[in-house]
Every structure is written in C-alpha cells, then in structure tokens.
Image (cartoon, rainbow, N blue to C red; front, side, top):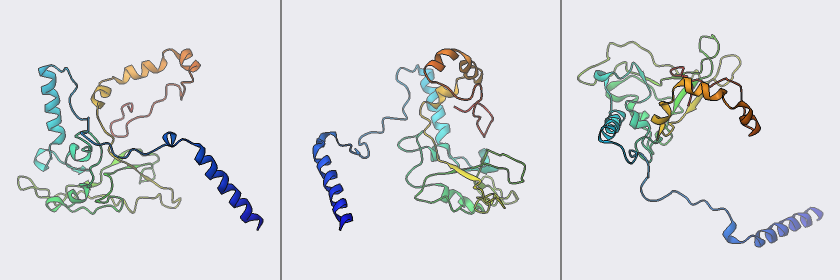
Length: 236
C-alpha cells in the first residue's frame, strides 16, 4: 500500500510539473526538412574556369567505373557518387544500398558480408588489428574483388585475388576482441577546400598561440595528430 501511495504521488508531481511548462517551450522534432536539398551546388561567384573545373570533378565523381577504366582489384563500390548521393551528389548513403548488387555485378564472385544490407547504410570496414597478428592495422579493407567479373570490354575471369571473409574476421581470435569497425560515407560538401590545406600548415597552426589556446581551454595531445588510414596524411 505504501509503495502504491508513493508511486501515485510521484506521478501526480510529474503531471503537475508538466502542466507548468508552457507548450511553446517543449522540444519538438521538426522531422525531415522539406524542399530542395540546398547542397551539392558550386559556390556562387566562380569564374568560368573554376566552374568548368567543378563540373569536371563532379562528372568524375559520379562516373560508374568498370574494369577497363581501372576498377579494382579491390573496391567498396564502383562510383564515388554511388556512396555519396543523399540528399545530393556529395552527401551520404542513399536509401537503397548499392553494395548488395555490385557484389555480384557482371558475374563477380563476391559474397555480401552480413553487415551490408539493402535497407542499411553503405559501409566501409576498418580493421583495428592486423589479421596476421602483427599489431595494429587501422586501415580500410575493401569489401569486394573483381575476380570472375566480365564487363564485356574487359574481364577478370582469370583473376585469382580472394575476397576477405569479413564475417570470420569480425573478432580477434582467442581474445574475442571486436576487430572490424564501420564507417558510413561522410558528406564531402566543401571537403575540397579543406583538402587544399597542406599538412605542413596544420602542423604549424597547432604550435602557435599556445598560451592563448590554453587560456581558452583548447587542448589535446601536443603535436600529435590522427592520420588517414588510407594514405597516411593528417586526418581532416
């Protein structure tokens, strides 16, 4: 009986408090934004040459590559734009994951890893540890290979490269520590401007105004950077 009385009192207090909060001040999820995406277009004010450069880059970004133009031998998808397409070219995963179909496109002999789903996000697999027991890895391992694929103008029927068994490598043997972590496509809007910053400039900027940064609470590991697992450059 005492428990019932206490619970009833708490509920009554919560209801009373809620009634004191003006409806207009309650947080609300606005839902998906309507209208145009408002992203993916070139910057306003580009010169004719700069606009042509942007359009050429966008064409390259959305091109679907085949064997004859350099696809493989390992890959995650056959088009940059295929991974980065929502809400516009340069964005993130589309509603339907194209990795499921590209795995066996034109006869390719791949299996679809269990973590790749048609109604799920596009995924890259990054290995925390090397599979040969040699220590840390940190790199992205491409999901698919070109073996068995025949595009008509080029084929890889004689290619013997093997796809990694990602489901079997999900955990480190014996210790059972999770080895594979995932990344989904990050929108690249404006990333070209960031990529133009030289590594040397990033390193130099980290060293200047140390006292002012400390006073503002800006800190971290001194002069230690995260590095891109794909090419070894300073991560942006």
